[in-house]
Length: 380
Image (cartoon, rainbow, N blue to C red; front, side, top):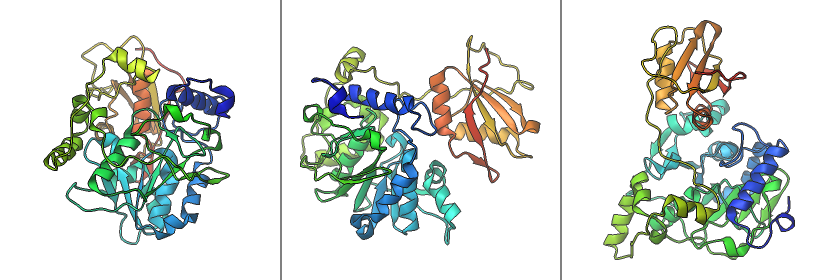
């Protein structure tokens, strides 16, 4: 798709996001998780595009590489580990810090490195980095929804990649010469109007697609610190590490005046799209149909996730613990261990999608489990 052909003057970032997401879905260009809307798309050919990162001279010279945790960047994380470089991955939604260092087992096999590069590896083989630790990031790899050949980038709309880079700049981990790479499908390379970009938006130096390596020669500077007036107290509550950085910058005499949190109506006006809820859902007690009757009414309709490949001998309590650990506890769990499967009921499609994303690469007792929407959605 060419943005000049489809985006009129005054197009917003959300117009461009929606067009790209729709195009990828309409042309079946994505792998799980689907649909790609409100995500960094896990496009077909992502692994091929990721292998090109090791061909860049900056990669050869890099020692420490930060790669975002998005599913389509799994191949890039694997390339970093295979090259025996230090891999830094941001903590999901920055809930518990800025990033973690992935530490594979001593003498790890290629299969073990593949697991370390997955979301499971980010959880199981990582060591958190503290703000006090000095780190110098040589290369940054980010996901995108859309990017232009001039290096302008649009993410999924939550601002985490921009904020992560600004936080690294505030810590002195990156500077003007740090190279930023994004990895996308060819259809995600579009024309982005200069006027919709803002000072805090991250730009990129290289674009890798399944068929191309694009050097952008971007003339727009990257953010060299946190724009505190773009943040508000609500954001600080969600991302505790921001509070620490604010205190450090305040001690250094910098202006750390926060902006005002917009109302829900204002948020929709600013983005052109209603904001997605990012508030954590309260944990639900898992119910097992054939043993523990529910003490509360289920919704009139539920969205059911099928979980297959459950290994023989696995206890339902072990599965429950894994679901709680990944914050994917359902309203109700139907256990069919003898058939190596279970069904998980969630309150609505959004909750089910969040669970599917959390259950990617789930492995129990050495067996990989398969999570997908159930073919028949059962009523409550």
